[in-house]
Length: 77
Image 1: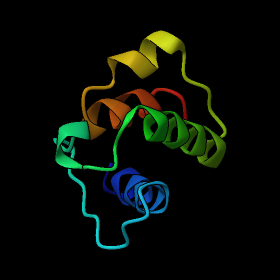
Image 2: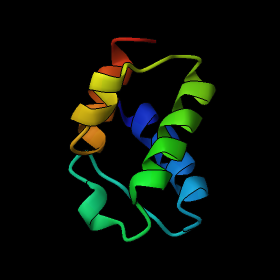
Image 3: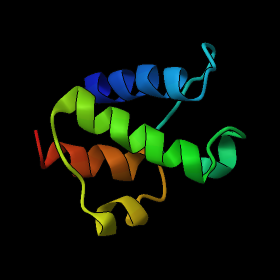
Image 4: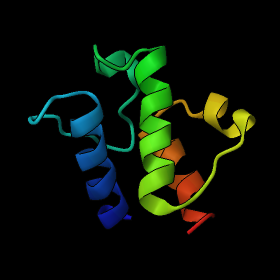
């Protein structure tokens, strides 16, 4: 899981254009000013591309924090 979290951190640094960003499983959109609805879509697209997976609309909407993304991603890879 740490490796996934590290990889997600790198993706989020790129999407949110913040090279100093450090995430945890509890990190949510309210913790990152740049994490708006548009960047959420871009983030999901980058994660899908990086890991060659696809999330359903219901899954994307249900992601309340990074831990939710990690948990869902682990079921797909």
